[in-house]
Image 1 (tube, rainbow, N blue to C red):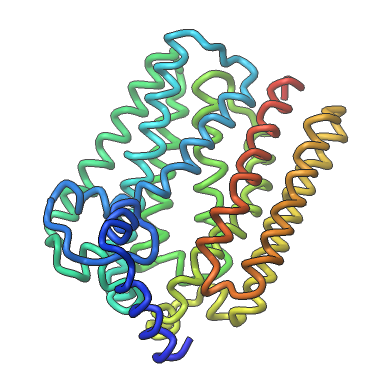
Image 2: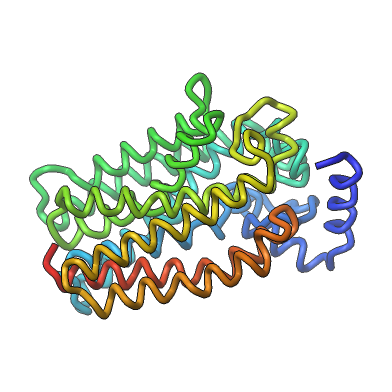
Length: 333
């Protein structure tokens, strides 16, 4: 991306209606404006609420795959607490850590973000990170105790996930510097970890579920690549090896869509192989509109259409996840 294109993009952002820009800023969507003064809104911006949705949905899919969820008041409250854990607390922690260690990149790509714009101090950001981490682990422990786990499965998932989130963003490991490893770590965090948590809350987490969701996470790898296109200029300047930087925008876009489609097709085929034919067929059919939107938007201009593509195609991907969870629960996997 040339400096001219970057300037043009920033000019387009500045021309957005003020209310629209503030809403995008609050949710953590690219294309916003600086100027927020409420410290609580700034803290929320750091946590990027728009990114909570896939993790919350992953809990739903895990509950479905357990085969044991029923609509009782107790189960509903447990599920809501688990969604709070996976979304606002652990994903909020992850995003705040990422904002802290990506502040130099954001100064190039998204200077309106809270840290590079100077809206919040680094000390305040660090306090928020520790609060979210401790609250998340405490809630995970409470959920383990509430369902009588002898082995603290949910607590271990929370601790492991928080560690993965830290080394993804923070030096010296900073997994996001490695295009393949970092992108898969992000994809698995969006699919496998919340799925395991929801499944463990209502059932017994087993190796079949673990392996299947790790395979499914390769589709999440494709989704994670989509997120790299918005920061390709800053990544290139700072030497971060995201896939768009390593392979170029066009090739990375193709890697992205192939990963998204291929592994969903593989999961759908697996469901057919275990005689969950209806669910398998639904998962396979849900890939078709995703391919359509990939052709309409993403492959034609991934830099311009990344957000539009995700808004159009991802609902079909997450529906496929739910039907997969229902199928596994029905099959007693």
